[in-house]
Length: 181
Image (cartoon, rainbow, N blue to C red; front, side, top):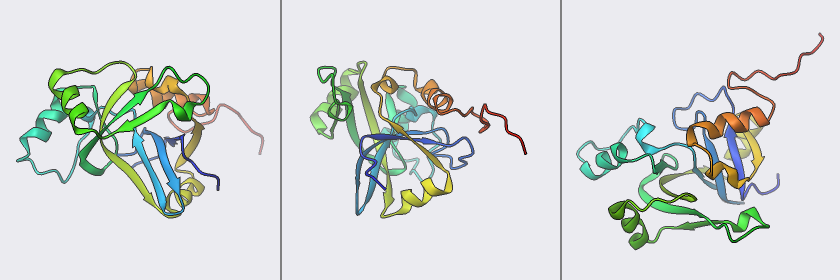
């Protein structure tokens, strides 16, 4: 299979995993050792995170604080990165995405509440081992969609539904085409 780098994974309507159900994932790394991506449509305030130590007041405060802080996936939730869309790059979508885990920039965003359109603060990431994601795709768990920066310009609650409809499905998993048996 070709590299999925700079593609979007869209979970199929039948996805039951609580983290990945109705997820849109931007793939930023895909090679022979595995795949890494960020869920880009789930504010962390909407997620029920399991296995988190409730004594961690900082994380509790983050979860309840803002719709501008996103859940990137269930791996390494204590790590954050900034996803920024570069509007200067007009041609190649893959050059428009910039990931940064610069602590000073992350602190500035949090402390000054400096969230702008085209910029997201994401905690955690999604990862798959070698061939794991390919097996899930073959099983029908994911749609592969070419990256389109409009996913960063729409309400995160609507992104998944929009991409599912564009793919000819609806949120219940039915196609809009009838057949004859």
